[in-house]
Length: 265
Image 1 (cartoon, rainbow, N blue to C red):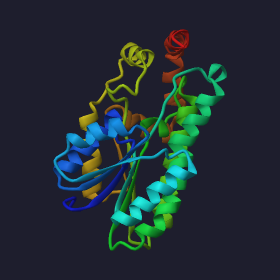
Image 2 (cartoon, rainbow, N blue to C red):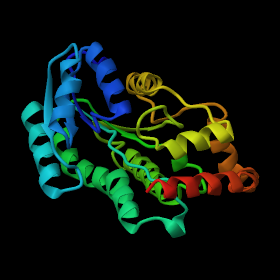
Image 3 (tube, rainbow, N blue to C red):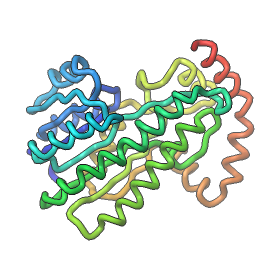
């Protein structure tokens, strides 16, 4: 797939991964519609881009915001939609604020689903269209301390897979990108410390953007990032008890850092 002159809508555009994606897509010649809640942050992203762009301050968690995005997609003849907006909260499930759980389910799963539902009729008018949902390795592996986040990303992966198959006889291709831990402000200090304690590698947002652009161009249905994380995904699918054993051994470290995260408020 060629990206030059494509009309691309990107949610979560002001986040670390979103900014990196915007930069690479702009360099490829795409016209971007940058979506987020903070117009000032979106404007700053836009000023750094090479190609024409639009900044749309809209909350995907509200019906009003999704309606604004849908109207913009129709007006600009958007033919690629990238759902990159996301939130994460690191805490033991029994101690987690219900508002944090609701925020993750809404932002990471329900809102992308509802937005896709509204935009699909518009994308069907295009000779070629694509939806990419940015998930997580945690969408395939249940990890202690990230129970609700894992639930939201498992849901997004399942939604994407089902939608791929449902739209297989249309002009719309649906893809899924699963990054591993990424070095952005998305992570709290406790998450950064946990990754260090567990020896988890972190990718740069630029690497995630490179993989997303590669997924777009390849037109393949999915891409999982990182080694050995990609191996863990396969092992978890075939032999989940093996992965459970490894994670349970790490449980004291996870609980220690979760307590530290809670103490920071």
